[in-house]
Image 1 (tube, helix red, strand yellow):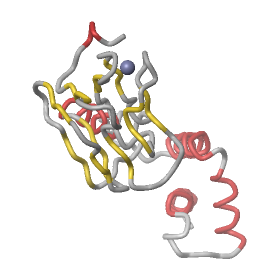
Image 2: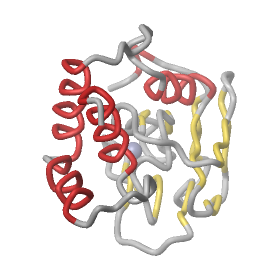
Image 3: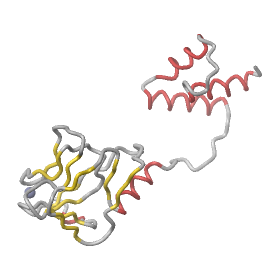
Image 4: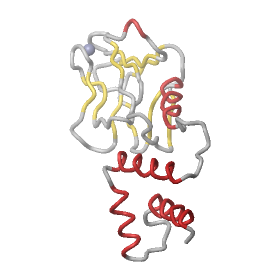
Length: 177
Ligand SMILES: [Zn+2]
């Protein structure tokens, strides 16, 4: 039940067909939280962020989820604005790589992408080690694999493993190599 926390606009389903249909075929659906009416067909989570959709059948409002904290956004984002009720009577087809949101939900998603630590990074050995640990958490331990491969193959291409390459470069600067 979202009726206590209505955010605008509300996307109103005006007929008994899905409001949106993704153009990439899949068997996922976004459904009304109360009566299970289909609101979005060929649904890809993350392509519709923070949309409050009012069901044609039962008038319940169900909100599409926000994408994961800090997930990158597609380059094409469509905002449905910030006001009122937006009635849609037939199915709108949604191209892949398009994200549909509202002014508010898009702002929240962008905010999650911004750097969390506003302080400039001080280059020190302990900070480099901290970054390596952080990278390993995010990538499930890829740093050692990547830096070993760089060393073993004497690879000097910074583009193959940019993070590992840069960290090793700074480590070497510290060691005076
Ligand atoms: Zn419903």
